[in-house]
Image (cartoon, rainbow over all chains, first blue to last red; front, top):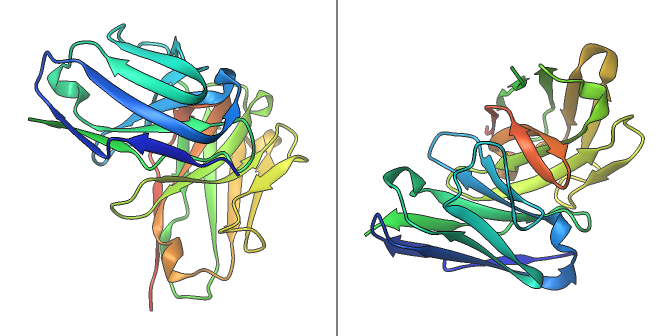
Length: 108
Length: 117
């Protein structure tokens, strides 16, 4: 079973700043199998990034993903007010298709 | 419009059963693998089950294996989750999600299941 550990648990930043969220896996897998989601209170998750670095349809280019092996990063280049939310990574390399525990991005 | 709509949630006693449904529209349902994902109150996302396009390849999380059954009816554009022997810890919002490439690109709005006496 692949365990995904996200850090930090909470990230406090101001609009306009850059955010870097980490997702570390307990074992290596292809970057094709790593996705990132954004979830706001009371809403379903929204796909941001698939294949570790490809933006989903309609996702602004301030969102980018990178990484390989066991270390993956979601970067938001310049935070907008609507970006403050919880972010999850998920792996599809091996069942169970686990999620990380989430990173809460809050306004400083 | 591509859409998934869950239904069937509600209040059930521990040990009881419930069947969730997910109605798909706006895309060719039979072409896509599907998943159920849940979220306990105030907690993170938990993947619980997957089905391939024909329903013959199925996976479960250990937390629900032997109690939950995923199925699909491609003729009805519907995904199901039969939940038996429910526990208090199964209380959550249950989402169905479409798998596209190796990600969930379309999600329903969720249906709340509350297990309580």
